[in-house]
Amino acid sequence: MMVHLIKSKEVDAELLDEVVKVLNSIKGPIKYKADQNIVEINSTHLVSWNILFDVCSDYRKKHAIDKNDFVLILTGIPNSFNWFSSLDEKFPTNGFVHVADWSKYLECPSIYPVAYLIVALILQKYMFSNYAELLASVHHEPLGCINDFCSVKKEIILKLRTADICGSCFKQLMQNNTPSLLIDQVQATMETIRVRMLYSQNFRRPKLISRLQIKRNELILKDYENISITLRPLEMCLYVLFLRYQGGIRLVDLIDYKEEIMTIYATLSNASLKEDIISRVSQLVDINSNSASEKISKIKFYFTKLIGADLADQYIIQGKNAEEKIIKINRDKLIWK
Image 1 (cartoon, rainbow, N blue to C red):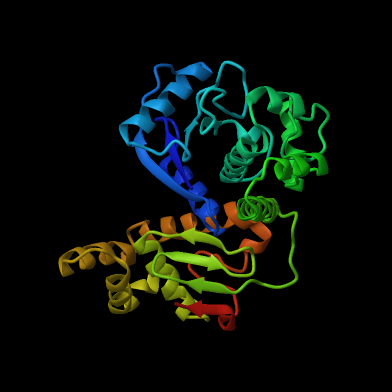
Image 2 (image 1 turned 90 degrees about the vertical axis):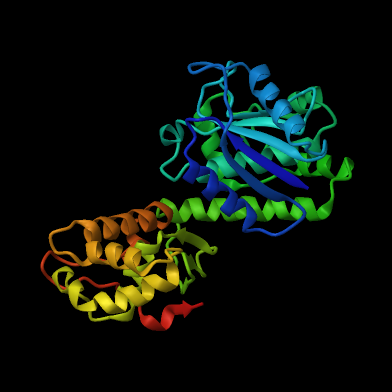
C-alpha cells in the first residue's frame, strides 16, 4: 500500500521530507511517498473539508492512483471544524493533516505529531466500516488511545506520549480483519514517534551515549531509535573533519586543512568541476567569512531539535571563540559507512 503525501504552499519542504523519513524508517506493507510540488488551495485563512478532499480527489485522478492507496494533504491553513486531521467520509483513503501551531501544545519538532496523525488516519480507515461508526467509537474522555477525540486540543499530548491503542479499539481492528502486518507496522511507528518525541524534549535520558553512523549525507544515532540527521555537503564535510581530529581545530586554522577538506568534499558533493569545489571550500576556510560558523550553528540546531540540548552536547561542534573547537563523542562510538 502506498500513502501519497502532498502539501499546500505554506508547508515547509523539509518538514515533509522529515515526516516521510520517520514513517519509512519502520518497514512493513505501508510505504510513504512525498510529492514536493505545491498543491493549490483556493483559500488562505479558513478552508472547508470539502475543498481539501476535492484536492485529494483531483490529485488521485491526475496521477491515476489506485483507490486502495491513500492521498493525504498536509496543510497549515486552518480548517472549518478546527480538527487536527480527518478522512473523507465518501472516499476514506483521502484525507488531510493540519501541520501548523504545534508549538502551542508540544515542545518538540512538529514532524512527530504530524507523522503520528498520518498513521492514525490509516489505522482508523481499517478500524471502522464507515464514518458514523468512527464518530460513535471515539473517546470523548481521553484515555491515551489513538481514538481520543481531543475536543480540547491540548489533550492530544496524552495520546502522543502513550502511543497506545486501547483494548476495545484493538478488538475493533480484529473484528474488521485488519492485516496483522499493517497493525504491527503502525504500532512500531507510533512507538518510534513516541520515543523520539521524548528524546527531543529531554524526557528520555539514556545512560549510554549512542553510536553515531556516518553516511554520505546522513548521521544516524543508532541507539536512539535510529534518529537521523541529513546534512548538506559542506556541513557534512566540516563535521567529518572535526570527527577526524579529536583534539580539536581552531576556526582560524581551517585554512591549513584546505586540501583535506577538498578531498572530503569531493566524495560528498555532486559538484563535478574542480573549480566549484575549490570555490566552496575556499569560502569555508576563509577567516573573513562566516561560512564555517554558520554551518556549525546549523549542525547544533539539527541535533538539539531532534534529541535535546543535553544529549546533543556529545555530538555538536563546540568550543570558545579563538580556541579549539571539538566534538566530544568518543571515536569508538563512530561507525563509518
